[in-house]
Length: 424
Image (tube, rainbow, N blue to C red; front, side, top):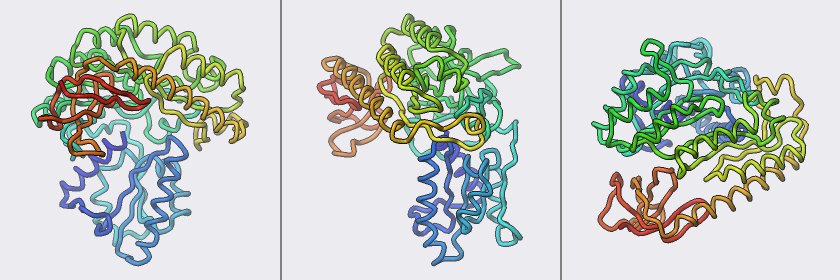
């Protein structure tokens, strides 16, 4: 979502005459688009700002702005910790960014544009995209779920959806521009709605799939309590919808899921996994996991490990819990699991997931799979990297193929993260 937002910001600034710098050291303006979902993202922001402090000292004319989720709910801290930052702008205020920068010399105080706009979706703005093969397309913004650990409702506000016709038109424009794949984005993309057309996300997915049959269609992120049988049936029916579902669970313990305000139990989550696999046996399922959430016991942790084994995730995003200011957990629950325990449990989760990923990927050896080539391999120009419909990364000898080509690859090797093979 932050990459998509940065592409929107670039489009808005270019429309007002700003030109992207090819080299950060020559830039007159440096903008940092921040994420507040996890503590380590905020730490990265702080590290980059600390690096920029020296440049600002040497060049007073340098303009530094912080955008996105961190300033939206931590305005005072950003300005107090980094007094050299010139302005901050929240996720709903990017349309005002160019005017703010233009008027910065006349500003009597450091500007802060942080108003919530429950109608803003940035629909109709053509982003300046980083690539030319795969694109991110936000179809909704905000979230109504208020999970105990999550800061998104605080930073991005309530849910609002881009209309059906606008989404289909933007996807069709991507196809015309030569893109081969699009990922529909939402903090909880299952909640997308077009009230006028009485369509839910299953209807949107079907409409987009039919409009651009030559493009691969992906989506993220799904909430377990909202994923529907109708949606899974659409994935089954439409060949250009990828067989990959990211379904964050966070914990395998029903007690923890209740504390996290996730809206489902362990058993209900496993029922949804069974439903998905009854329609799409070869589906790849990925997830998010949190180790050491408030009051987590060793028994709760063991239930997370057993759920991982029961599901058999392809891959997972795995983190230990960090308190997010402004969340329900920060206000109401003790962060009482010691850091050493959090990190030890996280390491167990990582080791188990790596073992499962390695086994799942090894089972692909000998198979011939469809791959969309995305880029040259970082290791060699004679190799390409691409992804299967299940979102598995594949590195293969390029032969006569180029990024953007869809081809068949015979898998000859595997690690816990990557497949390797030969173009057929």
